[in-house]
Image (cartoon, rainbow, N blue to C red):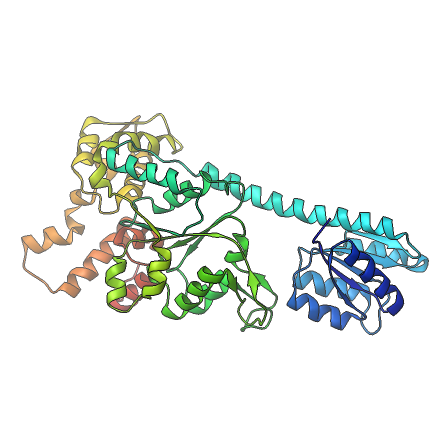
Length: 447
């Protein structure tokens, strides 16, 4: 029961002082308020495990305070103090989210037991939510391949998994950087804590900061309530910063400060918060070039790059292709289908610019389009077989065109092949979704 963060609200000054003294002797962290307005201000500034509200308060009663506090801190467990004449109101409070109530006059030891129970209930809820996430993530976590260069990456991953140092994972788009990040997490003692991914290039700057660090009510238009950020969601576990090279410079400053101190502020808040979390970042960019050209802070780069893992492209680990093909077929709705010899040969000769992710898409498409139990070469719809959409073949057959025209054709080709799924197209092209939207607008491409 030690270090429980407790808020007590009662307008009876003598009783309030008694409760505060009693709970501080129990080594609780205790704040108190004599009215609902002061209590709400405390709730906006501090996080609490358990709150105790008297049902009868001046101006704003305990029921209204309960509603408002649940909006600010829904995870805080609330106990209601009530007199004999207001038991029906206390029961109503439980329907609104209060955990339990106790009638005055009450036994302080009994109240302490209720606080301990409320605290354990809060911890169990947090643990259950965390475990649901962990189980879902673990089910998606599979590494396939035993080529020498891929095994070297796996061996290094195992060696550094249990350390707390930041790790920078570099590699082309689609090579499996997030899977390696998950391996770092699940092969460590943090495996029972959350693994939280953040796509640094998928959101505009102002939304990315809120997503990362959270915000308080009124911080910007539409911020109707306080919201925890992904940094807080990853508490005790791993925060995975995907495409960290896409992060705006202004946010890089705040990330650097968090890496150095573990402290941050929610958007619009004045209160410093502290979180212990392991940072793993990934990028498909040449980060040294990004630093040299002023697009990425040098101090942040060196802070993230304590240990670097380089993920080989699929072209560099072709011996893993048979195992990867069998794995991706096994994950489809028709796992008994086979790849014909000509289809397998075509895949072995293909360059895979989209790496392992592209292979997965090709297999998924082949399984879907194949009519019998055998996946033929034409079912894969390999880009090299689609001459009408191959800009390079078209240029060679006709005449040279500008780089801009070639870029437009190549982007349109990727969008068509991915059936205008912009996330997948951006992955194949090796650019962010935000950048792809800009290209679509610039070239006036339409589905």
